[in-house]
Amino acid sequence: MVCRGAPKHLILLVWMWAFLGMSTLSACTEERPILVNFGDSNSDTGGVLAGTGLPIGLPHGITFFHRGTGRLGDGRLIIDFFCEHLNLSYLSPYLDSLAPNFSSGVNFAVSGATTLPQFVPFALDVQIRQFIRFKNRSQELISQGSRNLIDVKGFRDAIYMIDIGQNDLLLALYASNLTYPPVLEKIPSFLAEIKLAVQNLYQFGARKFWIHNTGPLGCAPKELALHPHTNSDLDRIGCLKVHNKVAKAFNKGLRVICEEMRLMYKDATIVYVDIYAIKYDLFDKYKKYGFEAPFMACCGYGGPPNNYDRKATCGQPGYSICKNASSSIVWDGVHYTEAANQVSPSLLSSLAVFFNIITDGSSRNYSYDEHIDDGDLQMPRIAKMSCSRHMGENIIYRMALTSPPSYYGSTRIDGIENACKGGSSSSPAYSPHPMSESTWLAVLAGLLDGACMSLLH
Image 1: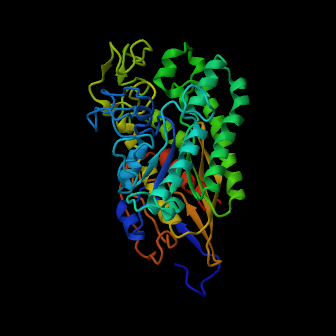
Image 2: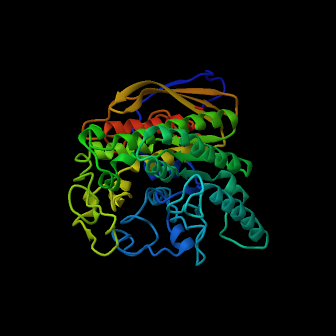
């Protein structure tokens, strides 16, 4: 806490490790966040099952739920780990008509969804309209005495999460016969839909946004299996260059519109999350994370190198499952395994930090400079965060990013006075967490870039 009479600008040198335990969250605030999610199969917790009746049963869900839940994967998704980390129940799909639980939030994501209307009736603009209906109806029911619904304050303080765009990019790639320029021309229209979604949510009271970029599409076993290629078509780790080039172009544009909206909406917190860097790191350093054969699906048909055949996809006649799903990064050729989703707990911790920071109602801006080159990824080495607080005080944190210890290391956090109101900066915290340096830097970069203007990283 900055005391009256303290210097207007306080410079703090910080060793930041990206993992914060829930004890830190609990100590900072007694509030429970509400999550409102929009997206596609990356975060669909049963929307396509409820909305279309598409039978998504076993083997999907076999690792954790031991039944089909509508999730495309063997178990929990990243958003499920978010909920666990924040002590929330799993998000019910908006479309679930039988005993949904909306006390922790609501999920509008539907597998196959796109930013632009395509082949499914639940594109991003439809999901936003569903949210508006859900919010208005919730308030009506509360006024009539209903309980366990999200109230006005809950909607105002909720974290609005968006993870969409990969289906648009893949459809555009297929239509262009895997040619980059035609896809590049379409990317602005995809980004315009995301920007419009944020603007509409803002008009209906949303102020805290957590926006994922898209992952390395060229590393998916399905894409590698479907498209004949030579070594010249692959990058240094074996992913299709054109797919990842398209993904990076989309991500660059998404980051730009996030920066534009931070300037437009001074009272909003817009966080850009670099999922690409985190997921690419899984493929690049798969042995370090305990994975095997990174470009081979666990559930599918055909065996090495990709175990994917469109005639016998996961769950269809002829498929087989690997002996240990936890050793695979990709479940069915497209979607990640629970083990891969769980390897990103650093991201979970970033969300916990994000919630801690934003619950005091301050507006924030984060920026960073001085980048290092990690292959195809640009990571910040020195980050500078400037936070504008409602008392008119300016606090500048200079984050000195040192390499994590060789055993993956413990994280130390000093002087985060503004993360916990009235908290002490004299007791740094430590916690071990398995994370490579590039993932560590990517998560921290993500955490800093979007929240204060300069947390969405």
